[in-house]
Image 1 (cartoon, rainbow, N blue to C red):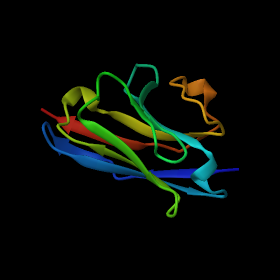
Image 2: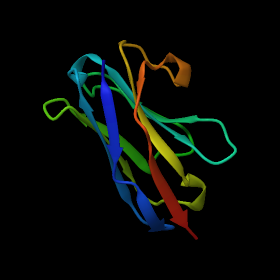
Image 3: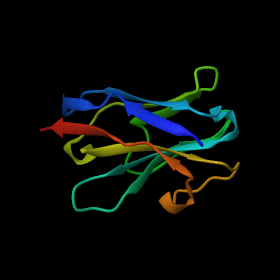
Length: 124
């Protein structure tokens, strides 16, 4: 079992930045493909970004490409999401997820473990 805990959410003005963290316990994350997803009220959960086990490859939704950066520190068992140039449409609950696989997927159902989420609110 892997337990994931997100932190770093909050209220920020449009154009601002936030850095989300996802700390894992239970097992080392070094064997897991990691992803960030978000869910706004009344909408389905959507893919934001993902990273391979060693950080060698990263993947982004078109809506965040060039503004968000995913990274990981396996020694700290933590994954990060740096969010810059935030927009009101980025407002959502952000979740990190772990997948015991080497292969990329943007489908939420393909991930094995999820955190409880952290709220990000961007005011205009």
